[in-house]
Image 1: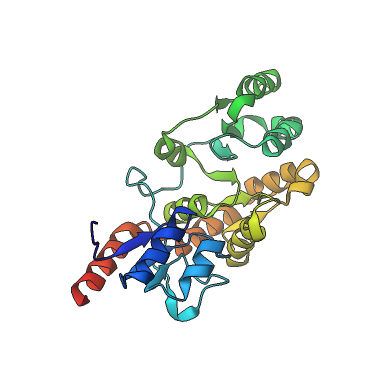
Image 2: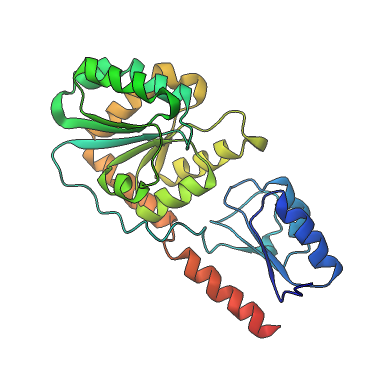
Length: 264
């Protein structure tokens, strides 16, 4: 009924019907894929798509269709400058609902962080476990801001020197656009192991270190300690992260879409 000139699919299952109808009515359509392994809908539609916007190489998409302009991030997020306060701030987040294994991995290693003195503080997005996580920090006498959820990610990113997180494509688009070093804990049950592929790509670039879920209880604390003790490593990871990001992806993709419309 609307007869659009162009269709943009964000890659979820809702893009499937739009992509099929675009083919039927010969309407140009493009896709976004934020992960290093394409999801099913993007894989199925990519051959007929005009273009697929990605952060870089992606498995499962014809190379000729990839336009590596990055993934759009929220405009409220601004340029990250390396924090200058004496204490190093670690942002811990497991998605909007928190992540039990990440929460417990941090709590298990609080005595290790306590031994590092007042040079470390935390911002922790803990989901429904927030009250118990807050109590654990207080018991150890470690400075921490603990939230069940917050939408004010711009402030938290600005305050952070190191991020502990899952490895979803949107999260990594934000971390790289802001030049934030990270320790990534990919979700083991993610489809096609796409989070591990995302994390390993950034690790190979020198922007991140990877701790797998089954290693969290043993290795997460020592990995954090290793990074914090080596300021050169932390700064190098930040530079490598920034080299992989594009904070202007929204504008770059929009301009490319306008070029496609002009040609049509």
